Length: 508
Image (cartoon, rainbow, N blue to C red):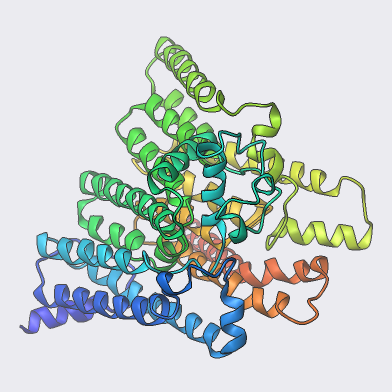
């Protein structure tokens, strides 16, 4: 009993390294179950019951603002709930590093299902994107129109029309997402609740696939931390809140990042590229990782003939896939969501630069110039990380490079930042060993929630609200300051460690 208690205590220590051997520890497993119960109570008491879908679904465009206006404690309660859940989440991850076995897996997976079922009935109070997704799918499946060309304003009689904010903007996602969403709408029919639940169930399915891929990869390559990797993704409150609670589709794209990682590990390089292409046909982000997978393949394949065969087969298969996906919707370059996104700026470093230039100089074509500059900087970083990954012979070469590229994009060059984007790097971070990178992913996910819960209300809920450009000068830095500081500190400490190591090597 004393050894069990000592092991349980070590799980809550601040030591960064996991134990070499995970053990069957009934006390730690009970601790996991207790943490899961507390998490579930918070999900039900703070999130679901006050914003129960069946009570509020008849109110279009409902957001946190009216709740906070009626009860100023609302936002404080939500912030504290996330902070407490962050602590429970960290403790659960530490315990997951201490145990293995069927009982521990049942607790983790069973509690994840319980969290999912609870958040299924949360009204999407933090964004209206799920209603936008439903409407774009209805444009295709109900009205036989093109969601990349036609807009919601053309269908004012639709039952979902009152729920929309972006009524004059076509779909900003990829064609595979629109096909999938149209299929869901056909099954759900015209009912509001049925459609909301159907899209949440779809996200839950892809979350389950993501968890399965993390478990499969780690059980094969690093079994001692497989359970902890699953907890890092499956128990993250921001992932669950945004994916299931608010119904954002980022997990549908993130699945293909993990599928590409699995294919790289299995040396199935064509499948890796195709997985990234499929992900990009949901959201364009996986395009950034294709050079990483491609260069790893070219450096790994044994001879010129194998490399040429890989390039030919992969290029042909990817081209066919893209043509088939865009075929039903194509109407020129405007079909590409990336083109439309180049004009959107908010809560990011480029948004600060854009606001400053507009306020100071009012230059023409400022948005396009900043967008092109950000794209160029991103491309240079991608090429650098691709080269680094190709020289890295460990099984984590793709995952490490992918994580760094995604984080660089979100912290430095992303034009239009939203908190649910934190799902992307966190999915990859679940594969990485304990250290600065997973810590950054977790820290970033919680900092991102401050966008809508803290700094958004402070900057944009005032009456009258401040000018948008002036607010953007502060918005991005306020949201991203903590992750920026963490990255700076981690780089400085890494440099200090390297300098010390070089000095010791020189002395010997």
